Length: 345
Image (cartoon, rainbow, N blue to C red; front, side):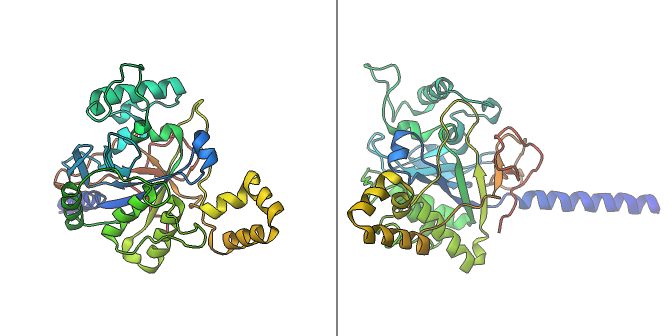
């Protein structure tokens, strides 16, 4: 009798474990706040914005569908001068590391390795939208932002829960609309696009700041707005995470700023303004202190793509369970223990 009870207890435990494991595969949309880098990032420290959808995948960078078992979604964003398209969708791992499989992610990276991985992925997967250039060995252009983002910068994620019905409606909407570029740095940039995507799932969740950003939509304002919205709407089940920049000899990215914040924090901007008109400089400082300060959670969990996690086969449209670690400065290969995304309230 005792043996029977023991076996039944083990069976029930196994069933409960299986159910809880399948529950990890939830649908999400994550706003990605990406730090600036390089010369352009020094001049314009607002960074980049994209959206990761873990139940939406793509047959091509311009055609969306629901994910199949084992797939972990795409990153979708607006880019400038990539074959005339307004938006492009890239699978998560290639977007971050320019490789197809997590086993191929390098522990460290150099500029030479980064170029090599990007060029190899372009030739294998993106030649239709980024063709060879007879004048150069590697084509120039902004296509490099499509893949290998984690070599250049640290990325902060703000993830909210979605439904399959919403994902299907999003897929239908974006597959039907004209995908023709109308990028504008001031009025129709990457943050404006991310705003439209997130607001499709949660209307009015992201709003521009007419004071701290002078009416522009910036990546940092998009994140700040979504965090504030989630505080008023707990059903969003907001989770935060950070994707570290891959260690190596590539220059480190810098912190993301808003428009007024970038003026106040930069001596090359604020000093001349203060000399010409101290009252304007003082007003900018007051605006930033009053309505422009926002910082990603320094204790955000670290996303680790190297864990061996398999989605539940019973779920036809699984989402990923990215592994996170409290060591926010760790490399992607540093932690391999936890099988689930940890809530950060």
